[in-house]
Image (cartoon, rainbow, N blue to C red; front, side, top):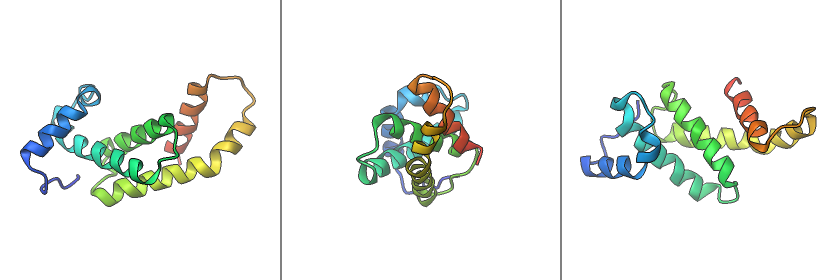
Length: 122
């Protein structure tokens, strides 16, 4: 689990309120404080490093980070950054080829979410 001991209760409460619309969908309410911290770390990292990434792909990246946290793949801030970097690298290297090889007509959302799910399986 992520170490949030350097955060005050007030800081965690502010993050929980900030991301309330996403966090209210989480069934296990005990993980909400840590997940709020993970989301904040990831969002700030993407804002700093991946300005040119489209809003959709920033969202897909954060969905991936949420999933990795829920599957106990994130233990610290470095894990968040590494997972984001690897996901964005995969997107940058593979997405154009993925689009070229599609033999079906699909909505942008269906096409993109399938690409994201393919990454989950790697």
